[in-house]
Image 1 (cartoon, rainbow, N blue to C red):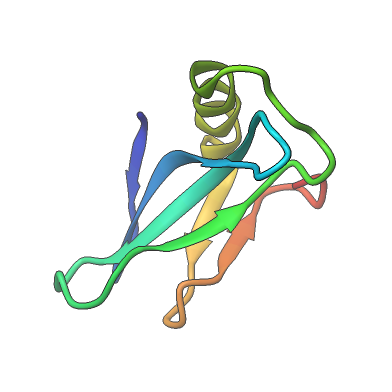
Image 2: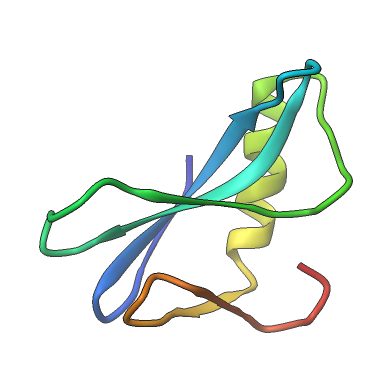
Length: 82
C-alpha cells in the first residue's frame, strides 16, 4: 500500500473486489482532518487482476502519476491515461 499526501487529503493505493471475480485497482482518498469515510476511485478501467496483490501493485504505480486531490476528493492526474 502506497500513500501520497496533498493539501487536504491523503491518497492510498487500494483495490476493489469485483462481483464477477478478480480485482480492480483503485485509489482511496480520505480527508486529512479524519472526518468521513474514504472515497474509492476505480482506476485503469477495463483492467481486472486475478490477485489483490496485483491490483494493489498496479494502483501503486498509478499513484505516482497523481498530482492533486481537489477539495471534493476528485483526482487530478499527470497524464490523461488513468
